[in-house]
Length: 124
Image (cartoon, rainbow, N blue to C red; front, side, top):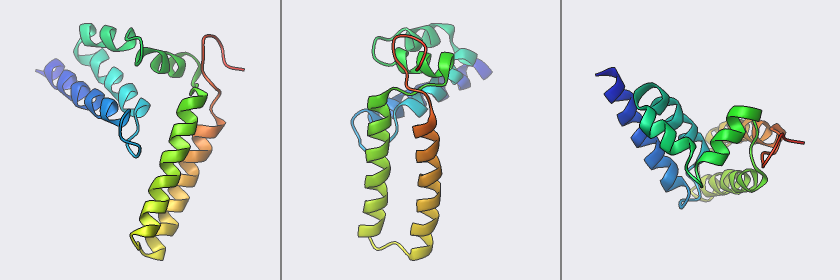
C-alpha cells in the first residue's frame, strides 16, 4: 500500500511539473525532483522512466550529481519570481504581505543563483 501512495504522489508531482513547463508561475524542476524522490520509493519503473526521459531527466541528473541548475532554468525561475511579485503588487496586496514575499523570494533567488550551472559535465 505504501508503494502505491508514493507512486500516486509522484504522479501528482510530475503532473504539476509538466504544467509548470507551460505556466510561468509554477515551477517545473522542483516538482520533477520531488516526483523522482517519490517514484524511487514507489515504482522503479516510473522512476526509471522519469530519470531517463529526454526532457525531464537531464535537470534531475544535474541536480543529483552536482547540485546544479541549468542557465535557462535559472532565467525562467527569475522571471517567474519577478512576475509573481509584480502580480502581488498589482493586485494590491498589503505592505506586510509584499515585504514577506520579497524576503522569501529574495532568499529563493539567492539560492537559485548561487547553484552551479548544469550541463553535459561537471559544472564550472
